[in-house]
Image (cartoon, rainbow, N blue to C red; front, side, top):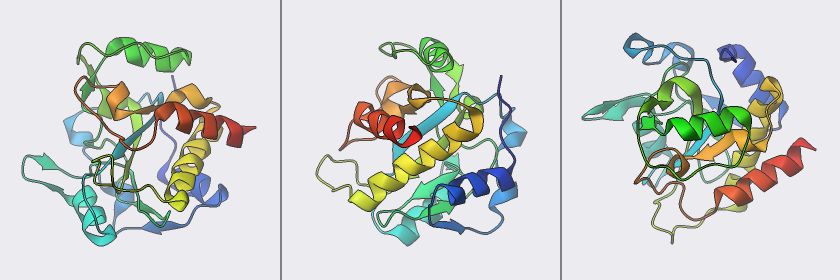
Length: 196
């Protein structure tokens, strides 16, 4: 059982990993905690935004849109590798997912195929939305991929987790495809290398 780190510790972890971090408004108190608990946390989930343009992407992830209020993640990783902190606490990013996947993440074992959505992921995962159209054509700049790697490693270091604690949305919820354009296995290998 891992309680979420404080907002200040979260910011320090990202900064200590060498990331460029921008604090957006009242991110420390912008959350959906009134909809349910946040924690225990067990891992980090990566998404793509299906947007382009950093300013618009950060705004949408902070404010949400009709039918899905923000924040939609804790941090937005834009194409230049900047991490924009938009919320802290429960965020509308993971949604319901597979309890078998959650058990595998907790045990840091190989992920099973997802076949149901019966567990509240917003409670259990830190979430990063990454600016990309998600069409398989929009490029992932090296600065952005490195920032994803560093952000994941930063949180894993604090909790004492290893690379299997990093998953993509597509590995959590049936029917999801994000992130598209790189594989989560490749990202986990990058994170494992950084943790060494």
